[in-house]
Length: 340
Image (cartoon, rainbow, N blue to C red; front, side, top):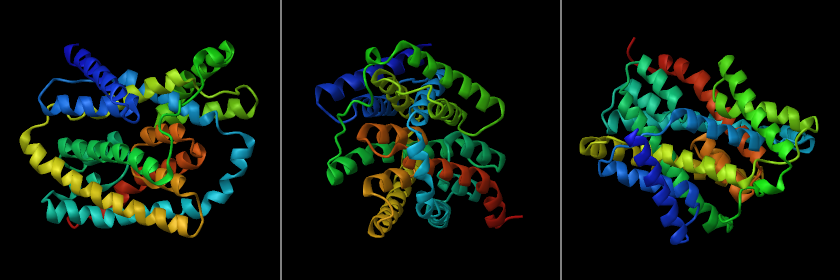
């Protein structure tokens, strides 16, 4: 219990410091930085998985509530950029695997599943089955998510003057109570049903799909309130920072430095794709960046909600990315592995 309480206190201090200094995204970046610093100095930290997952259901409901008939009608126009998602994944593999294997000295399994921009749990599970170093994979993916989530707000505000101080929703008191109950029901029932059928990303995609059905049938007219989105940011940020708990100086020198180098490669590839999409007028630059940045699905959804981007466009690309990685990663690993 003490590591969990420590994490809550540290994350809360991070929010307070960010608010006091008027830094961007205090509910997300404050807990990330505070918990990261605490982990690096050796404080014991641990989140609560069931709470972290339940917070992700809020984001699923938020996205599902935006899927109106007009938004769904725009989906066919996304196909040119959706087709670019598998291409980017292939380029990440072709650059990331040699980087980790030849330059950093990792074995093939660790290099491959460390390079794949999929979900943390999925890549660790696949990697463990293939004999990869699970601790190294955890640090690589945690660093990937952290760097991208921290870098994107500054890119969004610096290039597009995005207002990161926008409330992510209306106050809870302004939403009819019966609609709040509908949201809660969609979150819980959607999550449980998706988990029962084994859907990947069940905590987000289950509520998203059920909420979309309810919204399209006219049963929901609001997104989750600002207070709920702030709570989701807090626990997501705390969860990212807590993944560094127990890190050693050996891991800092070997895995953290290697991960930061890989993040540079990822950002370069992302910016190349964003420039191409913008140049051919396939999508606005801000939506392209949020859609192709290989960060966590939950974290990118939060940023899209805050800056007022086309959330459905962004989420569609991230769902496809995760889908392609989860289905293709094990097969591609067997084909590429030089060892029988």
